[in-house]
Each structure stands twice: as C-alpha cells, then as structure tokens.
Image (cartoon, rainbow, N blue to C red; front, top):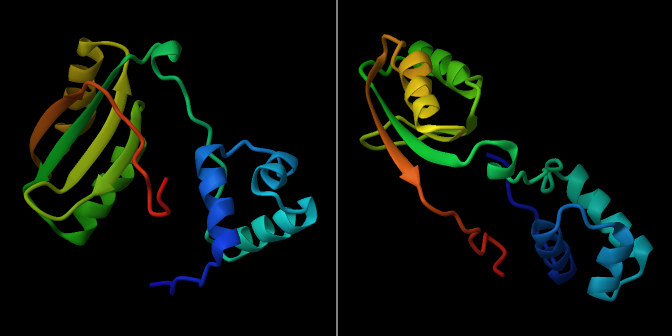
Length: 156
C-alpha cells in the first residue's frame, strides 16, 4: 500500500478545483486560486508525478449519447477461487455498457455500474454477458433514478 503524501493547503485547493473541473486550464486555475501560473503548473506536475493525480477524465452526458438507462448490477459468485474471480473481473470490465466494475466484500462479489439504451438492452447485458459465466450464482439489478456527485475526500 502506498503511503499518503503530505499535502499542504495549496495542493488541496488545486485538487479541489481540478476535481470540480478537470479541463480547467492552468491560467484559469491560477486565477481562481490567486497564484502565479508557474506555481500552479509546478504543483500540478508534482501531484501527477507523485501519483496523486492519475489521469484525465471526460464526463459524458449518457442520455445525450443514447444511453438513458443506468443500473447497478450486483453479482454473486458460487466459487471464490482467485483464478475464477480474476478471470470474471477481466471479462466484466470488457462488457459494452459497463462504466465501472467494483470488486466488493460482503454478500455480493461485484457491483457493476452500467449504462444502456433500453430495458431490453439491460436484460440482454445480464443474460448474454454476466449469467453465462459458470461461476456466477446470482445477479440483482437495481435501476438508478438519479446520481449526484458527493463532496469527495477533499470536501466541497
């Protein structure tokens, strides 16, 4: 496990701003925080090189792309051998429509966040891509009515 790097108030302010708007330019970031552009650029590079910032993400408007239905599919396994779990995990993340696959502890083994174009597509995703695996014992599908971003680890 990687040890957490000590962050100061400027690092935290940069992370909060970039979490809210990952596409923000360095110029805008510096202006928002009242810092010189060179300071912001240096700090962001340091946060990237230390592994605290781990990439760039684009948020998609899923309904506008034709995927108005989102769901969480809970998957329970009948066997928990490492080979079965890892092979299934690899397969789950490759299913078209899976936004995120989460390996969890508890009654379920995986939670899949999916987006699809129709109720029929959701049914087909479960039947054609998940329950076909012999290790899968049970699935439970929950429709998502609405999502909201939380405050995150750095607060609002």
